[in-house]
Length: 126
Image 1 (cartoon, rainbow, N blue to C red):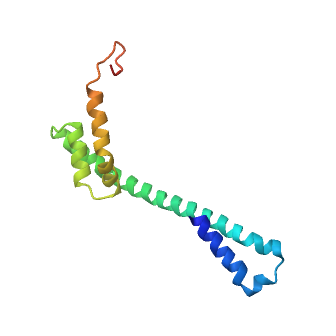
Image 2 (cartoon, rainbow, N blue to C red; image 1 turned 120 degrees about the horizontal axis):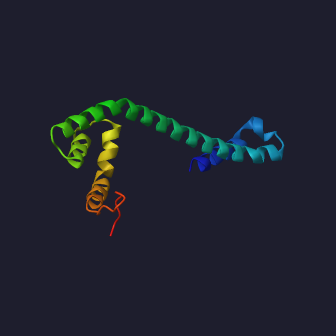
Image 3 (cartoon, one colour; image 1 turned 180 degrees about the vertical axis):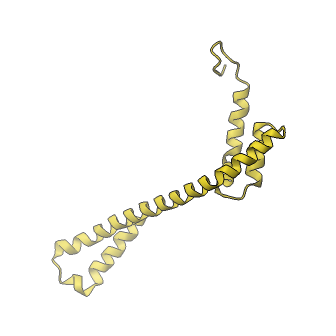
């Protein structure tokens, strides 16, 4: 989508700009493709920037989340209940993302706890 927008803006610029109209035809034909490339690069740059910001927020929240998880486990809650409590009471980006994936993780945790142990100690489904 970003490339299409860049292509459209480049085409509009190549057609409407008076300084470009005097340029050779190959140059005017290349401008929309240059706009599409700039749109793709801009989209990738914005995605990387958002990812870096989110990772910085998660990194800054990690000590608090781990401390709260430790307190819940020390108080006698099970692992799944402690994670649910942290996900429910948290307010940053890390608890919100864990709350969204918690039901899927909980199903996997419950089914893995029912697997029998083999002689080597690893868990294997029947």
